[in-house]
Image 1 (cartoon, each protein chain N blue to C red):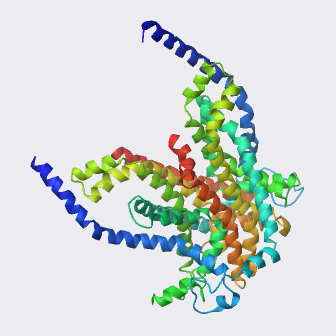
Image 2 (image 1 turned 30 degrees about the horizontal axis):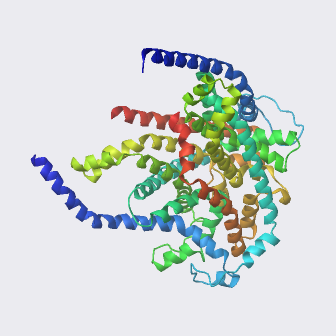
Image 3 (image 1 turned 45 degrees about the vertical axis):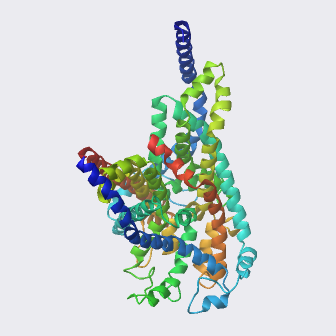
Length: 311
Length: 291
């Protein structure tokens, strides 16, 4: 290439980037209408939701709504039933998240190996995700029927003690059973995402580690774990959010029972709003739930960041 | 030198060991296959069993025959067709409208100056934290004010609100993966911004748009909570509502039709997942990884 040609190319490039900048500068005018739906359909209703928490809004038409400040929250502080439900919600969100992470991670590790039945497992691992939550709940309800369900039958056949337990109706087993079903639902997203990260590890890296004499445990510790760290943090954060406010699965499985053992806060707020009609009060519960989620995420993200900086 | 010799000799040893090492792995594989697959297979098998078969004390996973009456029963007698139609209309409308609204916004967020995209991304993340049980209250009131309570359109509006932020997030990831250089090259060749969008960005974005639309469709098809709150009359019910009601009232008696209905309701989701497979997950998290 001659010097002139190089100069010409440079000139062209300079011109191009200038034009691109110009075109970017003008773009926000075009982009404004794009944000209008977001503003109208997301920012406005969510702000209204928060506002409702500070009012005495109730169900029914033409009822005067007035601002009552923190009254709802003050009342909520003394509502022991809500805090019971709140505690259940946090236990539920954390146990489902970490159980599905554990199970999903294991499955991803298996799917990343050269094994038989891989095709079958890949398809199967997506099935729970593809199913509507209500269907999942119906299906597990049928499976767990205390008298004649197949799980009772299997456990009786295997002579497992307590085989005839009414898993969803018993005080002691209802919550763990619902958590297990929640993890069944939550596994696929985790499996597929972690599997993608695992497959991004270059084979040469593992081969080199083998040659250097690293055993399976060391390879896991120093290659696999760092490779999936980022995606795992994102997954845990998302799952905590999703699970803490999940509703459909528990509603159809147990409707909060037995004896309120599975009464997650989403159910509680739903009852408050649409059974008793206390919109403002229910909204204040929602705000507290949102704050709890933010709190859990902050703690979790800080902890995972600290772990990162220690390494 | 001696270390190399040691290492090269250790590799075949490990290869020989492999077979034993795999035994627990296969036990785990079998556990997962049963755990993931059995509930679904059992539901499918139940949907083909006669009422007499279902009353038996011992169940087999393979039904005696294919008893289609369960399907006929749930389709004809229980208004499932009407609910399926409602669900389909709602999910299609939601997916379509969400796509129309998010494509320009996602492009703007991905390409615009930091302040705008930062604000919008921040909002998307914040909106994810709001529990549905909070969001539903003002939505319920708005829908009531519009006179759309207990209508399909009211539900479409609500689903639009619910799906917009996440769809935006997903699509933003896809836009970011299109190199800006391509657009600059277009600008260099004298294309107007509209031409650039139409001829360069849009064709490259189609896979992302399809993925986002399918994801939104699926979420609306599966949604339960908003439908439970906003829909009252049976003729406006969506599929999950009808099936849940069915479960509560008479499901214990009518196992076969219930299983049949549940299987039918899962078919669209299975199809979509068949199409999208792993692309779905990478798309879902594209926004997360690229920031």
